[in-house]
Length: 498
Image (cartoon, rainbow, N blue to C red):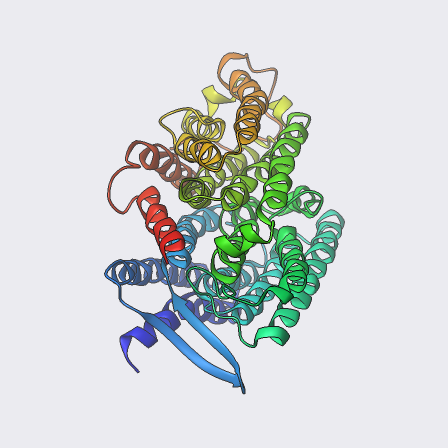
């Protein structure tokens, strides 16, 4: 077996092997479990970096195995998949550090970290899937591996949230399966191909291809939280903070948005999707979701629910970029896949710190918290400014390219959506920052834990500080080689020139 075949399997296997071993560890083996978690996450990052360098130099990495005649299981590294995979691997490492500190003293940690690793395994498989069937297999594995994380606490509320999550995601999976099966029946195995696997098909199949596209986007739109398929996301916020961070920034909603990218770019192709008239309706759905999510966020006093509705809005920037016919809009959507993940995970890490250190769960409880947790709230402030789109944060770069892409695509109404969304972002983030930094503390904190040396456990503080720094760095250094923006440009050029 050559390295070009082995490397995708090794990248997948780092988290899979880690999860399987952890399942069999006794609850008392805390140090060994933490070591395995960090080692698996660290090795994955190194392997992904090696693969990233190879793909940049036009190396081919692929592992292919026949499941049935004409049905292959394919793992393949390409530029688009590696954009998602690099984000997932890097944030898994930081989330692992955070989760170890967050869950210290909690029961069922071996079960939690076992499913946590399986969740990242599924996300890795989604990123490396070389055809539509392989993508679907890992997409459903992601549903099954995240459900135990959502219901981890075992309370009546968490179990009810888990049931809602399953109803939405399994229904979405069933719709996606119908679309995949229908397309396979017409064409056989559908390989992800730069420029679109379906380009050049005869005109009499246009009606079927349009219907299949609707099925695929509807199935993927559940995890991407497109309106009206978003209802599971705010409910799932009952999960522990590391899970919320995983759902919003690394795994589930990103898997849905990434799947929509694959369908448009690598299954249908931009030209065919535009010719079939599919991009404008997709852009309208994304625009409605962007505005709706922001409007709902304003009215939420529960901090995690406010952030959840913010995710509903922000992830649709990615879908909007996909729907803008042109390379500049594509760059905006692609780079926001990374930027939104970095900013959103920062916000959820900080929300977890507030809950674990002071018992704060509501915006109305945050008066003066910036003086008690200055580093946590500094990270929150940076990420919030990034979400609003304040330069030079990462979010500004995304919105700038989406705006330029809208003009390139002769869709000026998108500029209005971007401006309205930014104003609404400010409307639900700035009151939080004002209360935290400028209002006096109203009374005792709801449930303060003993003061730690670094305002809270260092394992809870380090990850949001790192991701807040990345929020600034990816904006300031956007024009440098190997930045997320540079990689997004590489993908966009290949999508439009091949």
